[in-house]
Figure 1 (tube, one colour):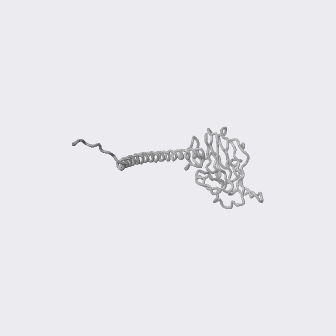
Figure 2 (cartoon, helix red, strand yellow):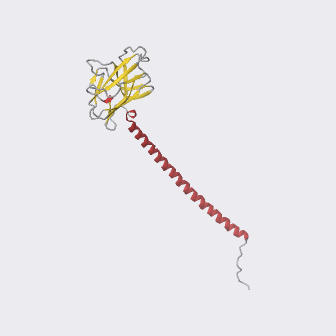
Figure 3 (cartoon, helix red, strand yellow):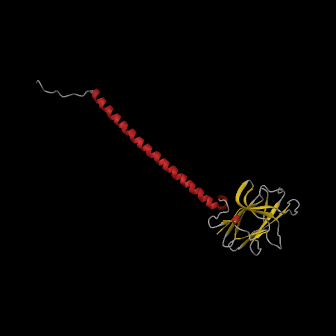
Length: 220
């Protein structure tokens, strides 16, 4: 019959074109989702990097606080204690000096150094410090690397309380061989330090050489 519209038939080409369009749209969506996921992952990685960096810094600060003397300068107070370099000695017969010293190629910025003179002036110590109210003394004891005529020298160091009673057995050090000392001083009001030098081959006295208490520190 004239004037009657015939239904449009879709052939294979039309169907393929539509399917291709769907695939293209899906690919666009997948690419967009992947971009969002990648951006999220990048942001997450950056956040984790910041967290790790902050945690590392916190650990470094904690380690510095735990090690105490080796991490600070200028005789400053640290964790309820102080360096001997920040104190005035109560006895000073051995010309005490303060500042950075190096022993066995390691630097100790908060050190006290004095002449290893032996017992002088009617059994008085070489040096003494008021340590009342503190519980722990620690230091690296030795001969500084720049000491003169110290290659054939042993120095015997004694630590005593205000009554002259030794707190530990004498500590013997030599050039390049310092010793770490930790003392309980909870019942000590005055820490006395005396040093005597000798030639290890002849056992003849050899005093007036330098002794360093590297990063010597007292804490509660």
